[in-house]
Image (cartoon, rainbow, N blue to C red):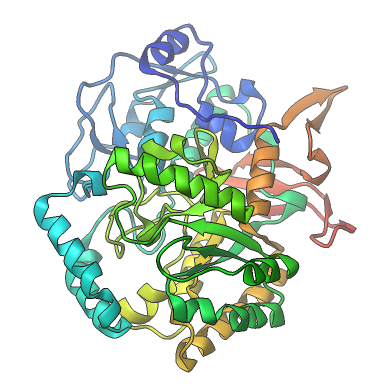
Length: 488
């Protein structure tokens, strides 16, 4: 399997290359897998020394350095619109910022005000220790109350935008549109985001927290199977329960995935660099024992700068919007993205625990709203549902309704119901594909190209519309022919 590293240009290379007119936005080209000539840009001058928030168009809130305008330290302050400073030199788009850095700042949470576990104060550590000490003796309802107190005021947080933030998508599409207008083209070919022309993707993941959830795993697998849904199961290797070879084998025999969840779920995986490295050795060993390619950290604590110590193909620890999580922030995208050689598959919907016990909602309304926003950007609707929290009948009923609705939605919208490992394999294959012009026709080259579809980004005036090719394969592997599909 070919690996790739998604690194933003460093500022010196960026400035040098862009003034020579030879550079391009790597993030933009990686996103679309399009020919390089469509996304050439230049930087218009030296960038500010300080970073801050600014706008790019009406909706996209960005964070980083610019060469013009002003930046604010608060996301909810009056923000300068950097789009007014776009210019063209011939057919080249001239920008007042480095787009790769702006996208990195969002996806890697460089803007976030919330301290990482390694930056906790003594008071935060004390409260964390007290919570985990008492956790085994209190029910989900009391834990939910304590977390509601902790999360008080979350609805007033301006950024990332609740309930789903698509800033990266909005920024990239606006940038692409500006680039196309600069070049005088109204149509750009690219490799479509998902295999066989699927308009979006859906994955189901299950984190097993405690013994009760572990004991409920087989029942949950039966429920999933009855609705034709496959899922990944993330297991805690140490401390919470003893994982048997029988359960691991049953998960695999059913065509499902086994992944690693943290080491012991104590909330301190990322609290200290040296301790993390020590634990990472154990985590990697369990990954090999379990045959796991995926990882998720407990409580969605995360520090992507330390990912190089993890020997996994993909991670699922970064929320799209983290207003309800202990570690705030969010990656502001509904698409997978690379953090060096690890593919990050973000959690794009609200966890079941947060929905039932924090928001106290027992309906599909929020999940449906989130799925609608995600699929408008053709992203991945990723669910995190714990066996521990769907044992009681009221929650189980909602979960069954969710599965039934997902099956109907997938059929109606031509979605790809996938396992996380399948998404990882596809995204890696797509990242190595090339769109080339052979004899006047566009053609996709590279391993896995037989599952890829050529699409077009069209200038629709003030926004981009996508056109998926007329010839596509159904998700069952059979060919089907339809008229070209126009999707916004």
